[in-house]
Image (cartoon, rainbow, N blue to C red; front, side, top):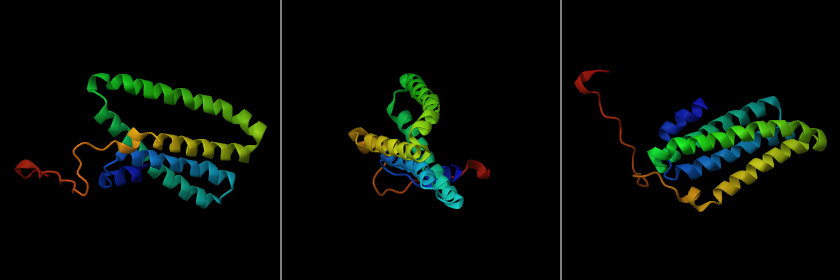
Length: 154
């Protein structure tokens, strides 16, 4: 994720949310890799790639919320966002064991990969996700350099 954050300093797409959502689809690779029993070194590479990609999504999501939601309503939107996330996590964790027992580990992992893939496609099917642009960003424009410190201070 640190590498993903460093990458985000240079990589500035005009349709940040669309790129971030597309990157979140990479998370399907890890359960799929576990299901097909990839070697550990391959899983490490996949995990690294997923970390880079999920950081792109996190940056895109946070930036988009801050740019599109009025400041007076941002805290409320954040609370709903966190509530949805924090409710879904334990529900999934509780369901995982019984599903793996009933369907088998491989089928459960492939199912998880499928849910991630379908969810990503569903998010990308939303027109506003695909069309949202970073305000003030011109296609092909260079990102301005930070101004030099005043008074020669470094």
